[in-house]
Image (tube, rainbow over the protein chains, first blue to last red):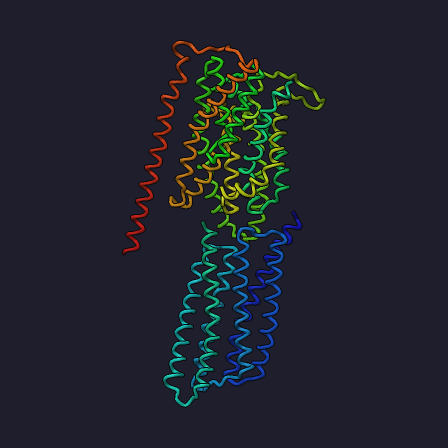
Length: 216
Length: 399
């Protein structure tokens, strides 16, 4: 029984570590975008390297949690949902890493007039994912609080959609000096930043249904 | 020869072990919270302990209902009950070993011209209603307490699950003990008056004749648990009770408490000392108590979660099972007595022309309408409550 308790504690600790990793990854992503837009390539490189490490760590934690849950038969009834939730959370840091990598590889041209919009978009999209983490933590201790914590996730997701829409509209309707290729590239990069909040929303939906089932 | 006559009781014990162990550990094993081996070994040990240490109370009540005074009669009564349970289970009909054995004993009473002890019958029939009702009340209250406690202590879900796992093992052991204590009467109760075994002294403890029979019956139950309950636990056990682990914990605890209450002579004596009426020591259907407990949780979650078919299955089991077992016993006794020439029992307590003699008919005349009335009132209440809730939801939706 002591062995079982230890493994349970270890998994609970690793779940917390996984959440920490995602949370830090989102902060790094936001800082990375800011660094790119401001043209600080050293800071951007630094953030890119950090998020790469964090994404790898999140993957390893995700796999070890899933593995131990099966081996020690932990949460047998909610295991498939738990695995899905971990996957969905991991998807957030994956998307964040992919976005920064795309900035690094494709070096999109961000006009000065769009710099603030880009930073704001990354901020709200990141906020959406950031607000998901307290809700995910609450699921394990206070499932009745999950729903109210998720309200902010949905709010920031809607704000991201609005910000992205405004930015695309501005690019295609007002910035006539940009070529079509540049416009399409900005639209493509914008879409990637939006994906973070979309992933957060998908995870929030799953978390909400899991919390409801816990409360019944 | 005694062992040959006991085979029908042992068969009944085996079916009880194979089917009813799922009520205790089904949801825990089905949800893989507890491994089958651990569940089966625990259930087997505690069923035997419960039967030997605390099985006499419910058995005495069954003996008062009809003291089957010949081994041939006891064999036939147990066989008829076992066949009724077996065939009704195969046909997918709701069935209870307790109700089958009661019907079979009444069938023996009719065949051998013995009066039915109306007091015992009333006690037994009343527990068929109070058992599931108590199960529902316990489940409702315990589930509420579990939910409140969890919210207050803010325990991590993983830690909570590991505590529940330990809890499921403990309440499972308690459930198995109560099952053995309460339901051993169904398996061996009819043999107690006809097979008077001598008390055996083992030095540190003694075993009465009845306890020896209960031990044999409990071994048969344990054999049923170990050999056949895996399939039932992993399939029927889980599909019947698709519950969360905390709900499963509450259901098993409620069932164990109800079965314990109806088999504990000490608890009954304590009630008497307090100046309250004694608790009847009667075999109760574990399946029906479990269904009652599940309904209790359904009530807690809201009236919409109640499956009315479950209620119907309980009510129909009150009538169909004893009638089927009684008829089968009557027919089998006729063949055993007239075809094989085996003594199936004598009339030692013939029904009187007036008074107690007509009491069986009186009981049937009064108790069945009362049961139906209670069920009807409850169903009307559920339908009205459902309607009210639908109206409220519609109103909120259109507003």
